Image 1 (tube, helix red, strand yellow):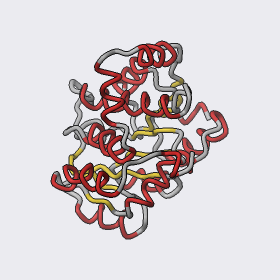
Image 2: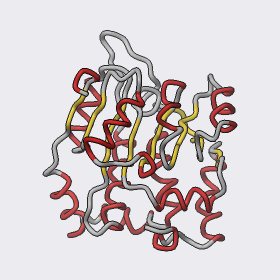
Image 3: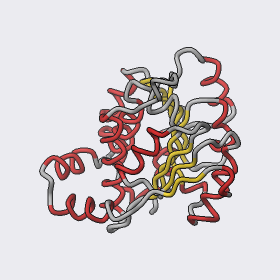
Length: 241
């Protein structure tokens, strides 16, 4: 899909769409045109877990979780890409350095295609993504938050850094090294995934259409949901590669 085919709004509309995100503290590291061009090649969404869907805090009795607002964000993104790509579900996965059972539960419920868990070397998972599922790194939109993710971010097509208020130098480093195009205003556990979904849908000009279709539970949304729910998640650990 070319940038022209992506069909984003005009510049004035784009600036209006971006205004709430800038007001919320988000930073566009790359020019809008560059982000839209990268977005045109996206065929997959890959999410880090800790620090992205949640704050990263956990204990034996309180595993890291997720919010329904973020879950809805992933669904709206996938539905939008399904509409654009003539009924093809975009590949979606979670890549986490720990064994997070809640990540698997979300993926099973939402019918993501894969969960890579326990990967301290996340580049190995990205290599597997290409060989096992035929998803090239440049087709991936990657949401991440910390140093462990840099090896993946440097290879992906579109990179969204989830803000960590306690690590301002991390964001500066990622920007300086060209590892992200957008830094969220929200932090992990404060709906940064939903912010990202709304940012991308606002940038493409799809937001109102997608939300209207979802809110009305339209025939097309039901077709998408039926197709999506036929899938099953593959859960992989380093020993499986």
